[in-house]
Image (tube, rainbow, N blue to C red):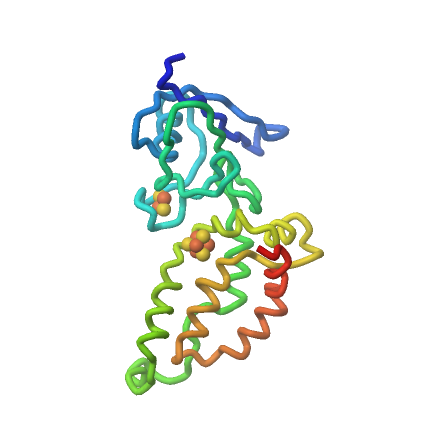
Length: 214
Ligand code: SF4
Ligand code: FES
């Protein structure tokens, strides 16, 4: 093994053939500027097919989230700084479909319950009559940059309780404030703020957010 080698432990699990998850270890030549995604692609091309998601390769689509040494990261934007050992696992607080691919459907179903789209009875042509401060617009656009990568859910202790013990809380993680609630609440065109606040309490157990005290 060269001093420029990465020893990569990867979580593997194919529920169709594996009784339980296991870790496979691969040697990958390290180079400066190498990303986690490039490590995964090297393993896929040189050793064997492993399942992982990616799309844009530039930190935009939010598809490539994984755990690197226990920390949620975007694989395409995270560099491996030096050779040595690393462990790559699927995002926490999701069920695994296969290897590093997790099932996002429960989170998406909770999103849909909040009706995160614009709810308004009047026509789009009326929108120009609605006053919307520059300050609120700037906040809106900042929050709307959420790429729905779900790294925050993987890092969130309250979401972990919701995942492991759904009888205790339905709290789905911080992304729901960012993308689904805050953007709508800041949007003066929207007419469903009140009903969303009720759903926020009943369907996503928003007060669980305070329980980690961080
Ligand atoms: S709020 Fe969560 S889902 Fe949205 S970009 Fe940030 S970490 Fe990703
Ligand atoms: S591949 Fe799109 S954010 Fe990483």
